[in-house]
Image (tube, rainbow, N blue to C red):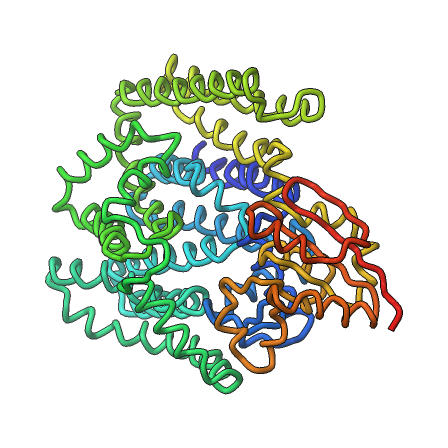
Length: 551
């Protein structure tokens, strides 16, 4: 029964909870608009080797991730679904990997199904699956390296081993072209200690070069192409994005060593209560090769990212697959033994979380409304539906833990299905400006020049109008390096030059402006602009249309 219906049910759940919500809300700034614009520009210009952000050199990431997002836009259109499809597809493939590798590990349909359901219902996995950036893609390629690596060690024939090592090389090569050298390092952190422990270091040295050769063969054509087009690419990408980010004193997003430990717990929602028993069982079985491999797969990348000074939550997403396998194995054993205590605790824990969130939202709505009364009723109703649904399904797990152990899956599904469409206007207006831009696209389109003081708003404007030629007003941020090139330096206008620039540009035609106005400095930037234009405001975003003036 399980064998027959597992995959069809998983596909149905993926379609409902992952694909349906993709077009229910605008693109988040700064990440989603950035990746949408860069990949769109590749489609429009045909320049596939070197990423450009609004026509400005952008060397922070390789090109393959943008290719996938561009492919989504090419197939489904330059719209919300097309931009996010690559992330959903990558997450879906990671879910499939969980099912396949668990079958290889245990040859137990129930353990395969349980592990897969746990992974796809992790709120971290579900939330990232509908978010247009490179993390879901990179996570998939790193997941594939781990799966391929187990196949390398578990295969019994020379042919199977060669194919497995070749698959590992392919995954490493594609991971490298998606986000960098980490895709080569992470499998080594797992393979080396496991091979030494298993006294198979000679095998690693014998077959490992196959993976290296395949990875190089996959990567070299693009590496040479980007070097020929942009000789400075590798200097910036290697030193700034790898060395400085890992160990530099000025590393971005610096966090303490223990930063990822509470995050790993939070990422495991709605199955947090299963963590202690899963780790206990894994520790007791640590000398079993498959368990030891999973522990190394989880702990070595976690330790590496913990040592890095620069940290972001998404960095540990590759740790979630081995975590799901360890938790799935432990949970499946408890189900087979009829032990439902930990599931009952898990249900009550999630229920309490849901009740607390419900009470907090109700209190704020009465005292300091998050949703404007009468204007955002539908959004508020959707949030309450999610919270009531979360409470009910976890109550079911608490009441009947063995029969309804999978009920929290529905809660995670409701989260990604309903919450993005139920965000309050205060968030939508400030974090998804592309929807506001759509409302005034007919007035913005004829402008001879476009101006913005915020990179997120600028990229949303660029993507919606299919125009990379956005002039940046007193902001450089992540394109500071690209703006240092002589041919793109004029794309930046500071406060001292803005009035002269506006006067000169308006002689040639209308000027469209999208401003973020929040801080005192941004209000001062707005005050320096002319006062004779049309003005539209939504939240902290202001759209200005300045007509042409006589020469």
